[in-house]
Length: 92
Image 1 (tube, rainbow, N blue to C red):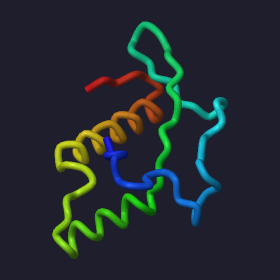
Image 2 (tube, helix red, strand yellow; image 1 turned 120 degrees about the vertical axis):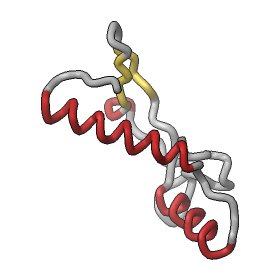
Image 3 (cartoon, rainbow, N blue to C red; image 1 turned 135 degrees about the vertical axis):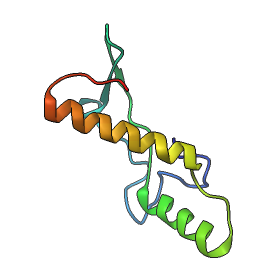
Image 4 (cartoon, rainbow, N blue to C red; image 1 turned 90 degrees about the horizontal axis):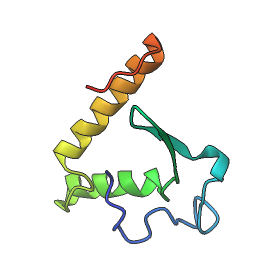
């Protein structure tokens, strides 16, 4: 998970009106195999994430996510692609 503790994360007046909040109709749905739960979208701003990532590489600052977190996101995206392509639920 991207660390939302970065100052101003998700609230950039240059990108969105303050604060950027997604409409409820666009919230995600989390399925656990038995039930579905609506999940509110967290405030986020990829511009600030990539800026923090750049500063980590160029200036030695802390990375905004760990390698393990990044790997988990890749796994989730790959599983989502399989789910969509094959029309079945894949969990691991």
